[in-house]
Image 1 (cartoon, rainbow over the protein chains, first blue to last red):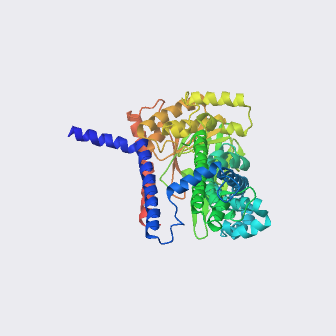
Image 2 (image 1 turned 60 degrees about the vertical axis):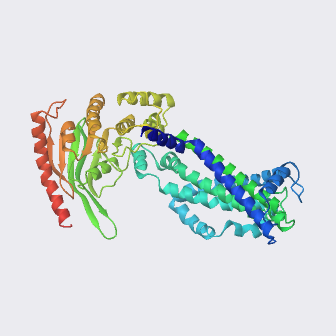
Image 3 (image 1 turned 90 degrees about the horizontal axis):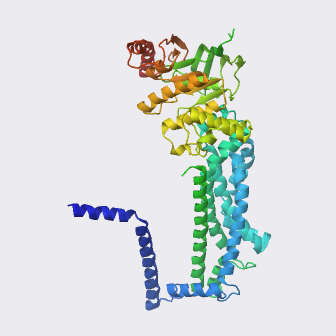
Length: 278
Length: 264
């Protein structure tokens, strides 16, 4: 009886541990790679003439490692250089979106007149998918700033809407408290409204970052000066039929998205700790 | 009309809430004078408008008619001469205890050293020494309300308005906080208007209990409480005064019950 209890308790502790989380993660990812390998092998075995589209995982891994040091097959830049170029565009486009959307969201949600002015325009542009702008923006702003502009549009709305929502959700009793302590409108805005939107801003930032990476792939479909992973992805598939390279590009983009989201979560955690809202 | 010692003077105060369809008379013909240094407890059945009266004095609600003066000056908006303590504490969660207490002082653009000196004094007064740099999320309900009281007092208001400040605390903490409030009151000599629905709390704290009528609220009876402090809840005097207040209140309470049952 007591031995059974000990086992259950031990298992309970193990189930909550980080080690279990890590091992489960490794198991599921390995299982996926095995499944992928079998799938590629089956396509080759049956000879359905689909095998060229689904390379073996080891091939993708090889070309990934190779192209980080040498040039990406068929292109004159390495994967590392192109990854940095794409990252730079995402960072610039996203940062510009943050700089514009955060104050605009605060103002639109706080001042009725600004809202009356801005709301119709926002509602007009919001339903248009950011990628629908690609043809115009790439021609208009050239292939260099075009992708940045698409990322800007992609990140802009989630940040704006979350900040506006955050302002509306400001606790009325906190505003009342500030008033009885002698706060004027501007004090309420800077000392109550802005701090209480912080969690909503961070939600907007995380959603906006995810959308930025979706946008950059589509926006780099034309050859971009300085290269880009999105561009490598399109050309490797369309021009060279090097699907091992295409899959390698997909992995690189996924990894960079994880990296930036992880960074945003770190910032969020620091911010909450600093604000005492853990 | 305002005597030297009158701190708050309310005359024929009324408040009507209305939207497109309904008009509700919340307060009608409420008159009351509160002396400097007095503790007045506002007591009444729920929905009688106790909190509305308090919020009007704080300047968070406008009056519909009547006159409302604090230290002889008409109340038009919220201001730091009337400190308000909230039932739900209303502390800024991103500010530490000290920064919460210094909020009003920051608005007065007081130099940091002076701010620090004042906040330290009130942190000590409410018994929060050692918790200066803690955020409200880490404090118990009773401690949160100590911060709420210190924050209101740090502005050196003429009156302290308290809206069921101990209503969300457990019974033991509540009794302790009542004693603490009396200690703080005797140290600062502030005029206190205290809204509560607890007869026990009112009899323990008040110099005078003002019982309100059911809606529209006005003063039904003002009962001076002459029991010397410190008051003992178990003394026969306390119990008989409590009984007296309770019977006044119950008559009003029944009216609201009847009204609710008849669907008005």
